[in-house]
Length: 111
Length: 117
Image (cartoon, rainbow over all chains, first blue to last red; front, side, top):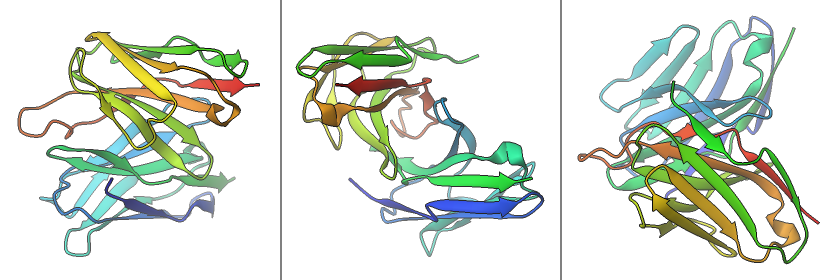
């Protein structure tokens, strides 16, 4: 199974700060890179996703930056809020490759 | 609104019992997946299915089997539960596109937290 490496494992940010989570992948055939958000007691849900034809995608306070040559992508949460406290998973998939998930980042945003 | 439902939110079983976890999706998705989630290990794929009666092993299939008799339903079976199968189990589904069978978003159920004593 192809790997997706995610860091950091945990992150503590003050309210209003920027949260940054990074992922790196190996398989250049991947062409779909979603981020999932999981609240305690719930299943993961799609937060935002990007395809490799663009280098950045923004939805509200959430931005994915994608670096195809470095095989890296990251999630930026601007103006982080306590309600953003959750576990975040990056993933990569595409073609005939089943989705591969990072190990997750536990984000805590202090009020 | 898309929906993936799992038969139980919490389950307590004894070692050696046969355990059935059921998942139903109402989105007419071809692909269905079973994961287990453990702290620090993320989501690990147990089995997946891309069509009725089709199944493929994921990363950790040992001790598990699956059944997909209908498109909307994907069952995970623990033939003889063991304490190391205590975990959160997540079901997911996704659309299968001709150009990229696994290219689309996965929709997850709420999870079943299984405790094996």
